[in-house]
Image 1 (cartoon, one colour):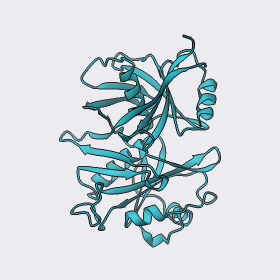
Image 2 (cartoon, rainbow, N blue to C red):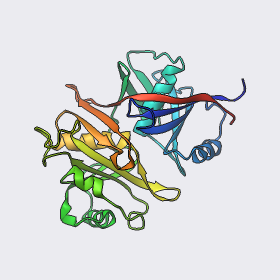
Image 3 (spheres, rainbow, N blue to C red):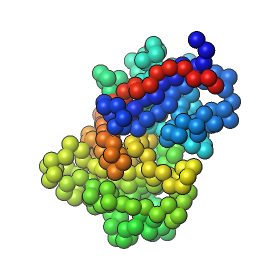
Length: 288
């Protein structure tokens, strides 16, 4: 058969078509950056990955991650989706964990039954946003500045600026202004039920936070269905500041009629694992 092995995987869901889809080219050898970018743009998905031989003995494979218009040093749902596709295609890790090599270095991926989880890479930038940025984000989200109850840089490759609103309902009601937010990667988080992160859920939800992610796409502002990199950075911020417990589940994609679930766990040694289910929706070969 001609062509390269290919899979399209739905990530952060155990139900096809309810998570965040990812295109995976399981053999990217010999492809130029331009060819990878062109194929990514053609898929019209939020990301596409290309699996390559590792350049270090510690890694099981190397991956290049692209979104429309640019390459990313790291992204969460491509990390889990690529590992799922690689394992399904017969990949055998050298050790207890799958080890991915990418632009931010080596990323361990833990297997817990069918669920995979990656170790959150360290933040490249953290700390409060400039007040001018917060005011701009509030205006772009269409909320009063006083509705943003906390904010932080959450940059772990993608340059996320994160803001927290008082409730999940506020997060779901957002109608952002693409012109105001042009050029920014914005993450928004709000606790479900009562304000706060610990205790019974007033609405009986199975998740603690509602998350939304907005970033520049080819046709203006794009909303990502479920975002591993943002949730990894949010967890570092929220747990580190005492706004979240060491283990919780976040919902994302609700506004897009998806049902993404991101499982967060910080273990005793401080490692923060960001997990989710993945299902293969398409398998075949592509000519590239």
